[in-house]
Amino acid sequence: MKANVCSGLLFLLLTVIPSAAKELHATIVYDDAATDLTSAREDAGQLWITTADLKRATRFEVKPQGVCRDELCFPLPKAKHEAFIHKEGSASWFNMTAFADLVHQPVAHDAALSTWYFGLRSDQRQQLSSLQAPDFTLPDLQGKPHRLSDFHGKKILLVTWASW
Image 1 (cartoon, rainbow, N blue to C red):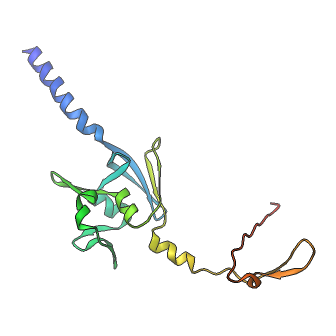
Image 2 (spheres, rainbow, N blue to C red; image 1 turned 180 degrees about the vertical axis):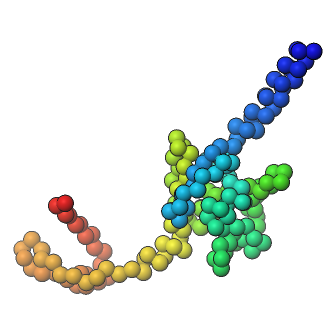
C-alpha cells in the first residue's frame, strides 16, 4: 500500500514539475513603470504573459480590432494570430516580444534577473524626431564664429564636454 502511494506521489510530481517549469516570475518595465508578474513564460526567447497581466503592466488589451490602449490600436496580422495569442485552458497568453517587434519597440532582457525592458514604440519615437535644436553660435579653433543654422541640411556631429 505504501509503495503504491509513494509511486503515485512520484508520478504526480513528475507530471506537475515539467508544466510548472515553463512558468517563471518576471518583471516588465513598460513606459518606465515596473510590474512584477507571478506567471510568465519564456519560449525560445519570447516572453508570453497572460492577457490580464498585459492590461495590468502596459494598459493595452486585446480587442477584436487589435491590441489597444484607449484610442491607440495596433491591428494584429490575421495570418500570424497564433504568434501573438495562445489559449490554454481558461488562460489566454500574449506574446509581448512579438508585439514589440510588430510596433518596432526595442526590448532588453536580463535573464539573470528575469527582467524585460520595453523601450519607446515607433509611434513614440516619431514625436522625438520632430524636435529641433536651438540655433547657437560657437567659435572654431581659429576663433571664427559659426552658427548651427549655417549648416542647415548637412549632417553635423556635435561633441560636448563639461568639467563637472
